[in-house]
Image 1: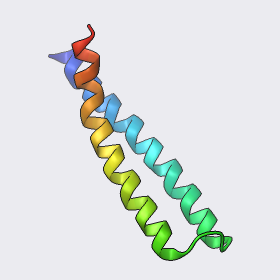
Image 2 (image 1 turned 90 degrees about the horizontal axis):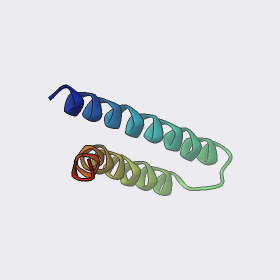
Image 3 (image 1 turned 180 degrees about the vertical axis):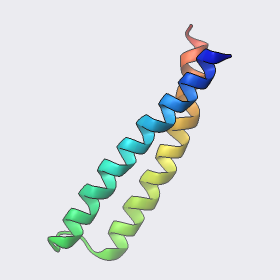
Image 4 (image 1 turned 180 degrees about the horizontal axis):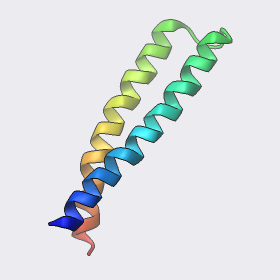
Length: 66
């Protein structure tokens, strides 16, 4: 049970850091006028959804192969 809690917390932290890095990169590109605001919002929302799915799936995959 303790391992599962550590896996879930670690997975959410990892996904959160990934999402934070992507948000910084997207809005940096937006400030440099490389992409439009709609593309920046779309990328951010898409990566947020991917990050949430990844955070939920990683502990499950890890436990399947243990």
